Image (cartoon, rainbow, N blue to C red; front, side, top):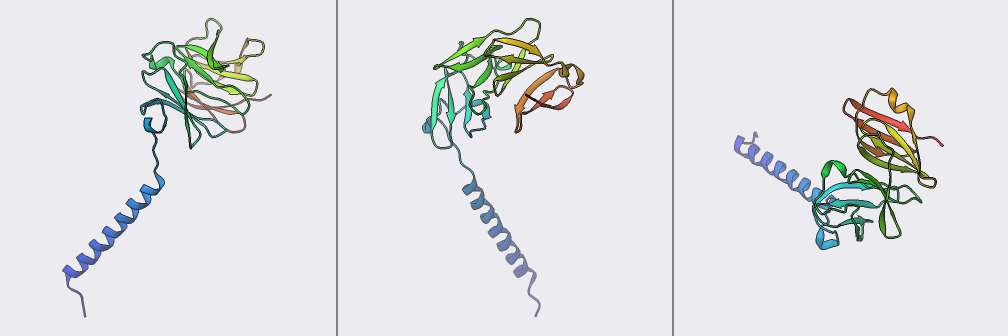
Length: 198
């Protein structure tokens, strides 16, 4: 015996409604959020990075502190900026590598966190605006708008990475470290990958 059309529509609506509830419930289990009540300096975050040890570094808005988060506990530390109001284009994400200090570009300067404070490292003249600082072992690759520079903190010396002149993706905008000493670089004209060798 054929079922009436109203019955078939009711069954279809019931199945669809059950599937929607199942998807909603599943989404609630997977999604977690944290904010100021969990120890962050503030809920608003404008720069976020993940280090190889699994910690998240969060830079916030017009507050003098930033946050690190290990998945359980948020810890506050001083933000690298000296001014309260951020100049967004001159502030980068914080990056670190296993066994090395965190590095950042803040207020257009290269800085590292040592002994509880941010220390400024002077950059060479004529390299343009500093964009990102990515530590790789004992060196820091600094992305500028016109090229790539390698900084050796132990000797405070700079060396141009000449291969940067060979790419057509310049000017450079951002960089993200990856596994195996690779750095992905975003330029105005494309995306590139830099493999840093010893």
